[in-house]
Amino acid sequence: MDENASVLIVEDERDVAETFRAALDSDYAVYVALSGREAIDVLESKDVDVVLLDRWMPGLSGDDVLEWIEDREIDCQVAMVTAVDPDFDILTMGFDEYLLKPVSEEDLRRTVENLLDRTDLSEKRREYAALRAKQTALEAEKNDHELASNDQYDQLRSRIETLERALDDADQSLADNTTFVSMIEDIDEGDK
Amino acid sequence: MPDQQPAEYDVSDVLPFEDFTTIPAGTNVLIAGPAYVGKKELGHELLARAVVNDEDAVAISTDGNAAAVSNAVQRVAEAPVDDSLFVIDCSRGATSSDNVPAGHVTNLSSPADMTGIGIELAKHDRQRSGTRSGTRVLFDSITTLLQYVDRRRAFQFVDVLTGRFTVDGYLSLFVIDDAAIDDQTVSMFAHEFDAQIKLRESDGGREIALRGFPGVSTEWRSYELPSQNSSP
Image (spheres, rainbow over the protein chains, first blue to last red):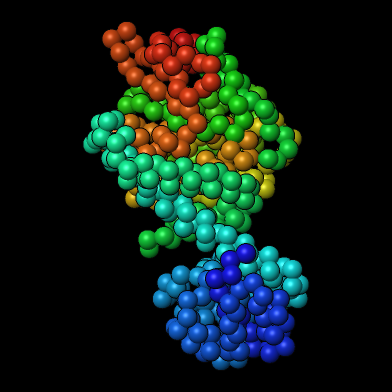
């Protein structure tokens, strides 16, 4: 559980929003927005890791907020939490999870945890790729003695080994098709 | 690991060496060598054995279209290609293939559509019958992928794919032209693989070296593809 992580609940029904808050606020910093407009205000002023987004709201809808997040390339994971059955329009929408109401507290907590794990893993994979590139560049230029006597190279190797172990441990999660595709999507969209 | 995956994959028909008959499930193999040395053909031979051995075969093709892949597999397996072959065709000249049952070929617009490749692999995972005894995957090739995607993202993509194939107990084969790209890049990608099959041409003919397979000689040895041996 990452207590420094933050979750934004976007839900126009106050009772539902408070139920979600109660399920999460012992583990995360939780913000609540009761409209799309309020959600954008929070996203403009706070770092948010996960957004739980209702689709149907008066004024700015959840779909509008999602589009705003995508347009501004806000670095967060989004779960649509909605009573709207999914239709083909979701194929072009850039969310990371789709939860159909009613959602149990356990499902909500598990979803947030999974989304945060994905973020962490994506960051680790990015760092691993960058460090591997540095390692191979150095190994191409320096001889074994130069490498063996350099503390920074030693630290680089040590960090790569740590990341490798962490990623190997996490590979089990790739057996889940949603996680697998989502990981690749993160890479695909990485620099766009 | 899903059920029905074997403990190892038989490669003895393709690589007839006494000290090397099987590859453990979950192994990711890099097939490396310069152009025209037979990397693609070796990949097809190893993939085609899936059809013969009642395993699933998945070809992710960035170079040849679906028809070329299925024709090669049909020729090598000397058997009609059934629904055990699933082709993800990312070549721009994509065409469907009459040899592969409908629904078993997917055309993507380019190798840069990594998400599309991921979705198709997930779809195959859901669709496969579950009665076959394993899955072989051929990714042909990293060299072409690097023409569409920067090195860092290509590396991360391969990292995720190899992780998934290991968890699923697949035998994966990735082709790379190590003469067409710089040594650093080849070395970076090689780290991602459990083992390598290297090919080269020498004065005495084609040679092969097997690296990273426990208990198997790493020396260069002469080699001909079985399908070339049997051709008239």
